[in-house]
Image 1: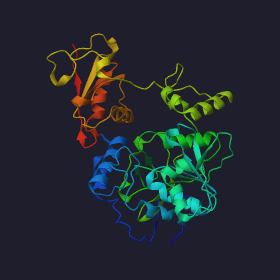
Image 2: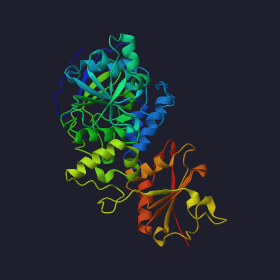
Image 3: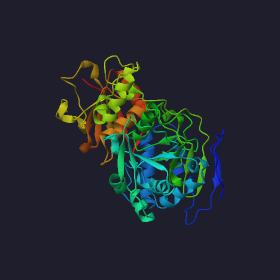
Image 4: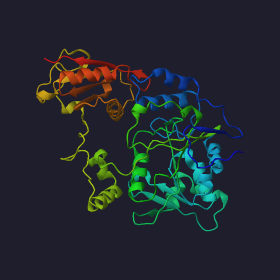
Length: 408
């Protein structure tokens, strides 16, 4: 087998590997071709996620746990694909490795333990800290190490690692929903991998030269418009699939720390270790103003209101869209109707797509059971701009219906 070194290049570098029982590459499959035909209009991170999830399920590429929607998808052959990480010099030379707890990365966790490397796994949703260190019992057999690499083993054979611990991660392995050959990555949409990396930077556990690897199915390697990328998005240096290993040569800077102006008060309350890091940086004289706090240089996130929180549509209004906004701030009088939402759509998915397209409203009225939502903007010009930006937007398999409402 060929061996990859850690050197960066300006162009992606492909190394073919002889991997037994691997599936044919499908990065140029119908799914990938559809992405390339979409162009930039109506494409969002969420629409890419939905198409990957749908494709993997419909073509029976997905593996337990299923369905893969709203997850880092596991795929058939993931355990075998993980074995190829041994052919990276950056793995061979590492002492401490951070691997996400996702199912498709289980094989990497096993290899790390088998190679007697220090294995760090983020705590689920960072609720109880940043890392757990996996500590197999003395004299653990190969079968025991396999159990330690599972999600149950991570819970049963680990000890928490505090912020004051001396941690220097040599290699980061993350899960992805989609990734491009340029190294641009899309996760499942909750932002934890990006936040974990930023927190590791803040505590000195990684630096800009620390390599990042992702392991995905070939069909997850797609074109991603650069316009979707944000400063806090984590990029990858190596992509491993069942059929190939790719050095991306990505030169886009990785996050240089926590961007507090993008952290909400709600998120801060959910993650105690994030509060501790914020206090440390505040004492160090850094600007730690949060997204929704007075004085923030960035706008506060759109507030999401359920239908019962807002005036209900008047009798006789067509399609359930409001004819008037009595009782609301006059500045919220410009509204946009969004229809044809999928039956299983979630408000956070629509909200995320709106933010990614630069069309976040001042307020959102969610009417999911009726497959619609009402977006409220400051004025008619903002509403019309949103209608233009949202034309052709997909949510799941549905093309959304978007129209500006004329309020009286």
